[in-house]
Image (cartoon, rainbow, N blue to C red):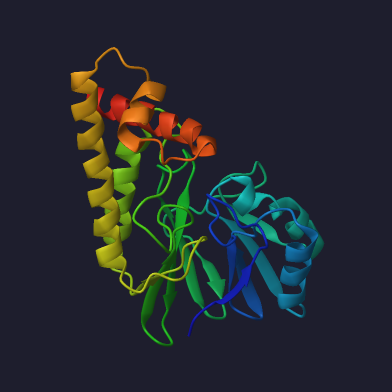
Length: 246
């Protein structure tokens, strides 16, 4: 049994075809990553949980395309906010869980894409399926996500991929892109891409040690990279240089 999914109308370079908000349960329901603060999306979620006895709003991290509607939605539904990213969110301690009528959700720290980032592990004992909601740790398409927000994020990201891999999930439900039917292969592909980029940055920087991050972007990504992505790429390279220096 798969979770319900409500996709926000916020397509973009980082959101792909829009933020996917997942709902686990019906009477006791968890809304995972409520998405951007858009009237159409908030109202669609309210309609989906109409008649529920208990509602939780779960946040994998605080970026606006994931948590923007969190406070507003929680107030509308008298729901508790669980996870990270908002001051009103409460993290689950080891051993704690959200008990929906479609299985239990536990929280796993998976920083890297952002300093505060978690994955929700879903165990649905009715069909013995192991699934997870990894937020932006991985996407439903491609082999990379943005890693460049803070010092130490690259090391954290690689550790988080291993932590998620250890769950041995049957399926992953990222917030952007379709479900991932081959979690193991996808996680290895994401790690391989990240390590390949680390080697590439190290090689180019060794040849041009005086180059700025912006100059390295031109060499590594070339002219095909859209201008509005160059700032994010420079931050990612700076984070990679920090990883290489550590």
